[in-house]
Amino acid sequence: MNQNVVIILASESPRRRELLQQAGLEFQVITSDIDEKTNETAPEKVVLELSDMKCKAVADIFIRKTPKNDSMDVYNMLIPEDGGILVISADTVVAYEGTILGKPKDSAEAKKYLMMLSGNTHEVYTGVNCRYLTYSYYLEKMIEADSFGFYSKTFVKMYPFDEYEALDYIATGEPMDKAGAYGIQGIGSRLVESINGDYNNVVGLPLSQLIKELSEREYITYN
Image (cartoon, rainbow, N blue to C red; front, side, top):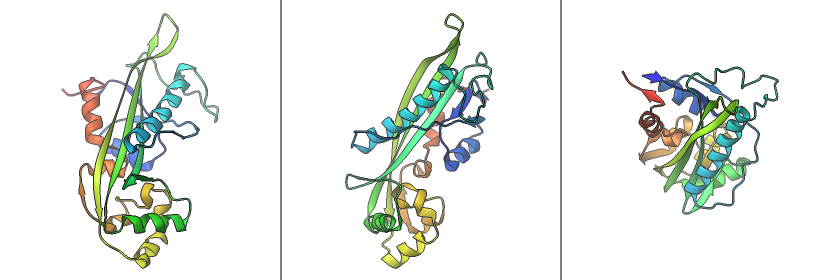
């Protein structure tokens, strides 16, 4: 596989980093501090809007040639003429009966979420956005030349469990930074009976679909 762009992952998620690494992609992580708020209510629209907000914020760093807060000039750390820059971002939510379950604010909310999911089937949505930047010699700066986005949906069925099992899981600390208060790739896997759809989408990035999109646009190619 040939990578024809410099990839920037606009996410601090270690799970998304691991998935990109598993795919054999080389990338750097750059994030921005934005207020992740949306007026959308449909899960698929929520993830796409929040993901694109993160993608645009990081792309703008290169377009404006703005140094990051730690004084590292992210614009100069790359060769802009070398195939351009592709910023990739993602956002994941859990939804049950039309209600979006984000990261729990405390143990009580984590328990509430888990008991809602116990014995039931819910959906996990991940929105992915990409913005391609290339160098304009006429403008003497980076410009956006392409952008696209998509979302993936996976159904997850949980085993029935009681509040004591939920509290035991919460005590591990794992649910506190996970949408829906569980991590399918960790201890939370013991709560999951089955899934219908892309497993990696539940982890936080629909990797197969992303690779397909990158290949179709020739951001990656195969010999």
